[in-house]
Image (cartoon, rainbow, N blue to C red; front, side, top):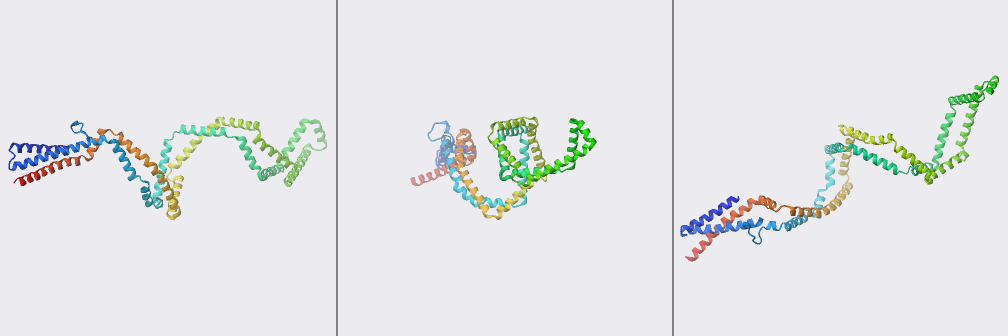
Length: 414
């Protein structure tokens, strides 16, 4: 296109020179008028086009190289133009309100195929995220987190609070009752009585062999032991029944005092709490505990991988059903749609306000940072054909104006 414009200028200059050489009379006068004005128009438009991007012939002519010289101002104006016309919060929110995002989302998610597609996409993301995780780093992070939380945990105070909750409203007495009932059942067992009888006979023969031998002449020591074991069991069962039936039994009062005292010690006795913390620290430092914590991530990772690799993944199916349910809720619940739209509009207004400043500054800084030569080259390539058509038109229109002027001169002179 530049060569074409330059060719027209060369033709105009050649025609002007030829017509002048031919005397410039008659028809040559018209040719000279056309070519002279065409050359002037071509040169003037060449100057105007070149002056937009650079200095014509490198000469320091004022008000040339307009775009490079005003790059900073153009950048600021462009940024302000985009801000005011494309990032105006009111205009954006008006379009967003008409769009009705909650209703559109509900309609879209109400389709099972769409909910299934979203769930499958989430499944793919989760699988890729698992692949990207550094398992060693995750294991170390889990162990560090768990160990640090355990070390910071005041086990004594927690135990005191738990026991305090358990003793509230007499719950610890229910525990005592259950323990006594189980003990009674144990003592009433014939096998237990037989073991107790055997132990008594064994001990008596070891400690008092002569007495046992003498007694055995009169009556069997085994039968005496059996009778004694049975009586002891019955006595203890009677005592247990009395404890169970009497809320004010001395055993219950002793038990109440012991529990309250121990809860108070857990809360206030520093020595006891330090002892519990030492036990806790020894447990934390056990290799088996550390190995267990390290293995937690492996088990979690394997479970997630099995779940996500399955075509019938329960996790994905649950997500799919949840998305489908959300879509149907949005489609049939105007109040829910209005609430979501309100949240979206509030968030969009805040986001638009932040974007206005950020995007405006970004556009301005980006344009200012462009290399001037590259900027000029890109602009010339973008609008170059039209710029060269300006030169074409300037040449032809200038020539026609020259012919018109020559016609006026001839008419007025005649």
